[in-house]
Image: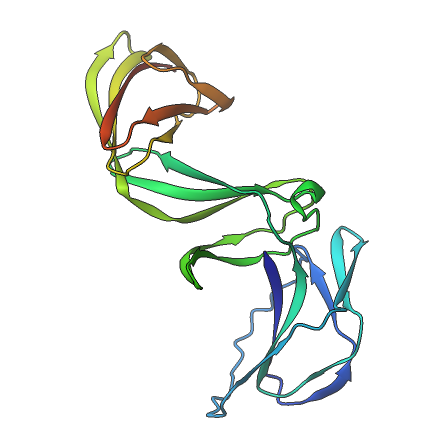
Length: 251
């Protein structure tokens, strides 16, 4: 994992041997209700990459994190400069398949890892875009990207890369039962179709809101919070798995 900072200088001035400090965090600023006019230029922009060994020193600063570049840097006008922030090798990560139903057949693909020292990280991660590549022989191919928020140490980071090509889900309502004016039940059937050449597990994640109870389920589930239920559905290669459950709502 390689993290880079991009500095885009459009000020019209060059800053030779500048001392560069970066603040990571949500710093509140007052937005003035003034329309700013910007002149359009036809100048070409230059991308400069700097991967020197000694880079940013990080420390806590108020309720944010301050990154100070350990040497002066020249920021030329109309230049975007990329400076290495940190890097880590062999970060353990898990691939996850997630289906949510709600009229869609798409099964999303996520990669999750922990931002801790055991994984070779354990650093405050600034908000930004993460691009993922997978090695394919001698080359690395792009497989997706996602954005992360400011993430402290020892927290999990989950990246959505796209939708699985060979895995699909279907959800239909099998029964609806109105018990009273404030209580009703739905019986749902979820089918996971796996056309891959390997067995996988697909997580069905359903958000029910409040005042719900699962009264029947053909597979076990967990409830990570008061509004959500998650089923880990095993899907054999080139096969189908069917889940049936009944949820009762009381208002």
